[in-house]
Image (cartoon, rainbow, N blue to C red; front, side, top):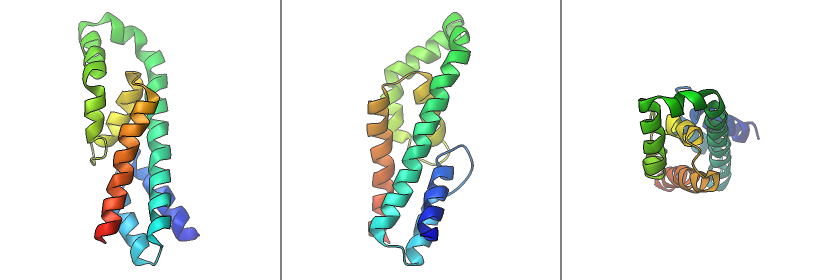
Length: 135
């Protein structure tokens, strides 16, 4: 149980801006004998919960940045770009370093939450699945 909770926590932290490797934690948990199914569920649920939190942070940041986004030329352009290419950019959200900020930006530009979760969430679960089957 402790191993499962540790993997959940590591996967949650890894999906925030903190520099943390959920992949290493996943492999470590598998090496310690955690079942692949439990490992997939723990890592995926921790990571999914964190990207939902990231989206919510971005969503609420919009309230603070609304005026700046819509009154400056650069802000308008960035917001428009986010809507035009945001879903495509989410295809990169599983990558280290750039992926987690993309989940915040998705909330900031108010991408549809369910599409966001479908794209970013499924890619993260797929990443863990591929690590598990290659282990």
